[in-house]
Image 1 (tube, rainbow over the protein chains, first blue to last red):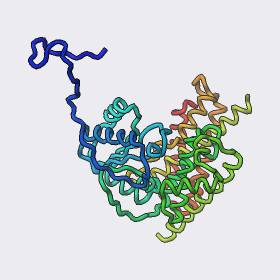
Image 2 (cartoon, helix red, strand yellow):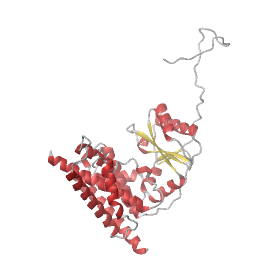
Image 3 (cartoon, rainbow over the protein chains, first blue to last red):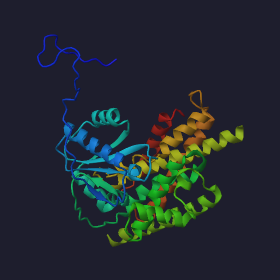
Image 4 (cartoon, helix red, strand yellow):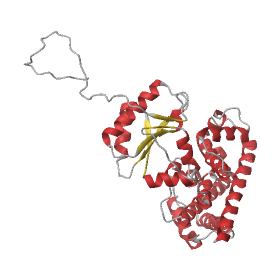
Length: 253
Length: 113
């Protein structure tokens, strides 16, 4: 049972007076956030974002920026956790922050901490990082002017992760499949010098695999034979392109 | 049942090979840390391989020597073939000499040996 202790000898109110119980912790004023590629967000989610930013602010304030990304920003309440990216060159204890977020909002925070250098390098060489920035809520306004540097060896490494799906279709959940497909399609588009964003990647996935809705993939409602045939085709096309890139890079040296 | 076990062993081999190729390529790519934290959420070949091993060997005892030899040889060959595809295209810094050492480590970590 919750209990509130009052001193026996007190001035101001007598037994039977009505009182107001109020937290000493002052709520921070709602601050302005920056929305990138987020068309609508439910008011309750916005409150959660504000709460999370307040929690991080209280625990740690030497950061470059904080970005909220991932399925939390999708319409509805189908998310499992909330992706939080903290860009900072300082060390911080994410376990503590994760625990407070869980306690105060009831949501599991998936927190990533990247140094400024790591983040910039990711943006230059990795299509997945570009996808993050294509749809996020940012604590601070940002302008990351980076140029795409196609590093074939790095893309080879990233693409290899999506190979898991080829042999393990039956073993993987819909969400796991979606993440692996998304990784592969983002690389495929990136190699084609296309702009990589969440919206575009989802659109291409639907187009390539003939899906009416991306949920068909996320909910594991796809036809294995047809899906794998197309998946392998794109995977090996992308892999060949990467190998050609590595080959021409080696010849130039 | 035997057929099912054999299939699981083949799946285990495929996944563990993929994870070793990944490890060797990671070392070859750069000395700087790879900005890949955003992919940590993707299920990895190693995690999948471990799940298969739990099904193949639920009692967690080392597998019979005959199986271990078969698995080991097949993984080494698969990893080498994957790496050779890249080396033949001029990919530098791939330490092929690491293969056996990493295969042994992976087999220990998955309780095959």
